[in-house]
Length: 457
Length: 101
Image (cartoon, rainbow over all chains, first blue to last red; front, side, top):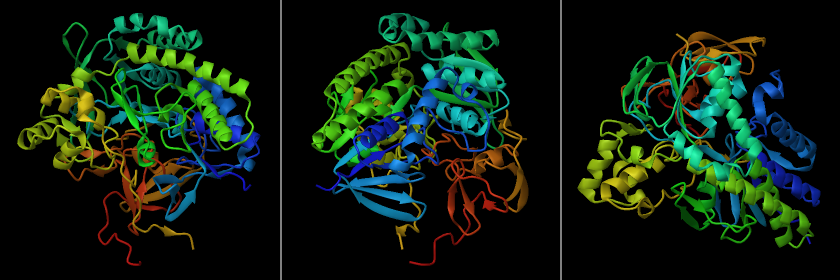
C-alpha cells in the first residue's frame, strides 16, 4: 500500500503534536502553515536573529513553548513543511494552497485541521480609529517584534489573555494605563470549582494580577465600554466607559487592545462540509467532532483551538489524539493506552475551559445594545444603525441574508471580527435567540488572494 | 509622531526603505508595519470612512494593513518583512492589475 497522504493545517501546538505522532508512525505528513515560522500564535517565534530568552518571551508558558518548538525542530526534516502558505479552499477531497503567487491542489487520505483561533471582538464606538488593535495583535507586536502598540495602552475586554498580555506589557517596560474587564468579579468566584481542574494555570492567573497590582495598573471589573475617543487623522486619544458602579469614567491613552476571549477559525471545516452545532455557553457555532477529533466528514479531523477554545495545553493533547485517531482509521497500529490517557487530559482541560468561559463571559447584551452611530463592520464602515435599518427594510433575520443586504461580514476580514457581535445585534432586534440567526457561511477563498495567482511552472 | 514604541531588540542592523517616496529608517527583522508605525502614526486611508488606519489584528486575519509596491503588488504590512531599498506606497497605485494572463 502506498503511504497514506496526511495533511495537517497549522503548526501551532495542535499541529506540531499531530505531525510528531505521524512521524512516530513512519509517515511524512504535509504541514501547511500560514506563519513564517512554526509555533502558531500562542507560541509564535520571534525572527531568527532576535535574542530575547524564552522566559522573557513567554513568561509562565516558557517551558511549554520551548517544548513545542523543540518537538517541531526535531521532526523538521521528516515532514513536508510549507510555511507562509495559505489553505484557501477545501473541495473534492483536495486542499487548495497558495504561496505567494503559486497555487497547488493536494489530495489527502486524512486531513487534520489545526487552524487555531483569533480574538473574539465586540465592536465599540471608535474602534475604527488608528490605535485600536486586537488583543492578540498587541501580543504579537510585543512577542514577535518587541514593540508596544502605543505610548500609553488600555487593555479592554474580557478573558485570561487580557491579564496575560497586560502583564507582559508591564514586564517589558510598556506603559499600561488600565485593564478594563467587562466581566464582574463575581463570575470568577462562581467559576472556581471548574477552574480548580487545572490549579497550576489558575495560579498563573493569580500571579499575573499581582504583576499588574505591583505596577500600580488600574484594574476594573464589570465595566461597560462606551467609546474609544479619537480623531480621524491622529487616531485614539482616550477611552470612555461606565465602571462597575455605573459611573462614567474617561482615561487618556493612544492605544487600546481589545479582546473578549477567542473564537475558533472554522472556515476550513465549513468548506470541508463538516456539520456544525451551536454551543450555548460560548454562543458560538462549532464544528462537531467525536471525543477523538473525528469530524462529521470521513477523513477530516479537528484539533486545538480551531475546533473549540480549550487552550494551548489542550491543543497539544487534542492534536496528538486526533492524529492517532487518523492513523488508526488508516489501519496503522496505534497505542490504545496512550489514546485513553490523552482523552482524560482533554476532559480535564475541557472542564477548565468551561470555567474560563463562565468566569469571562461574552457580553452578549452589550454587543446587542451597540449604539446606532457605532461602526459595526470596521472593514467597510457599516454602522449598527445601518444594519438595523436594513433589517427593518428587508425583514432579514438570518446572518447570511442580513450580510447580503448590509455588507456586514462581506469586507476584508470576512466577518471574523464583526460576525459574532452582528449576530447578537440581529437577534436582539428581531427578538429571536441568537442561534436562530445562524452563522456566516465560510466562503472560498478564506482570505484574499492575489489576482496573479497561477500554477507552478 | 510614532505609534509603536520599541521596547527591546534594538541592537539590529539598520536599513532604509522608501514609503511614498520618503526615506524611512528601520531595523533588519522589522515587519513593514513596525517600520512604518515606529516612525509614523498611520498606514493608510480607509476607503469607506474619513479615518486613517494603522492595522488591527497583526496576524493576517483582518487585512486592514494592506500597502502596495510601486509595481502594484499588494502586501500585508503585518506579515511582510521590511527590506533595504523597498519602495512602498500607502495608497493603491493606478493600473494595479497585472497586464499579463
